[in-house]
Length: 358
Image (cartoon, rainbow, N blue to C red):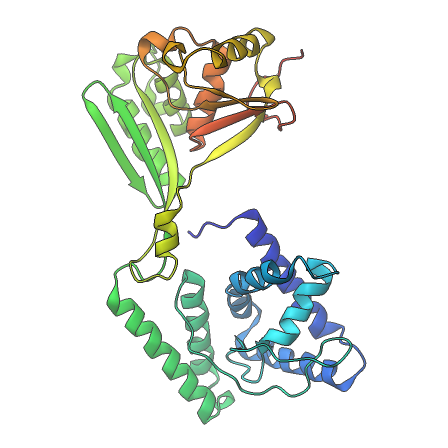
């Protein structure tokens, strides 16, 4: 399952909202009405679901265009820039295959509506799962209503299928995918588990916990407990074992973003309110942050309004120095695949954690 930032999802929503607005509420001039009619043909040819997949693939392009012009653009991103980008950048001349123009059309009209819709095609890059789904949707529509395709549209579809075949033949991983991983540290060594989603990963971690359940002081039958409870109970009660979860992206060697991904180190942290700590623990963190790193029971760093705290447990000798409220926060972070917690006085509160009034 692909992983998107919140900003990517917002951009996709803005794109879809603008398309519906341009289609259903065009301005009264002929160019705007012509654009609306061309969009309606694409909706009829592909269907709403298939067209949504196509629109999702435009997110990177519109965000790149916004980044390039954000400093000089006087109006808003959602209500002004995105509709203008669609008008200037998308070629709707082939209802089966709306695409981004190689060069955005220049617009002299006050509302930014280009007049003719030239058939400017470019070969798609099969860089995502959604690209592949969009191609399958086009192929299905062509089989269901073959009379809707003229010779040029049919040739374009065949060409795109060939490009996709080439991409799939070059790699078992034709587009980036997100995987979920966990590292369990125990006295015999380290276990590494990888799965395609968090549910499958938790099942593997829970299986480990059930196998070694006898090492903790809990008489309940682990087979009768939910996986989340099994995992939380086992690692909270075990004196020396710990685990951490993370999410990472696997990128094909031929993918254009590979070089960037190799250069930039990435990590995961979440921001939580310092109210999840007692005032006594907050005092300890202030004290520890001023000590030399070798003297601290945990490797923390002070921020302007709180502290950065790793979620990974230290050694057993250091663990006994950590108060229960801090251990609960660290366990919460590991459970949600965060490497660090930023405890901040302006951070949000999590419903699953206790809040202290101080």
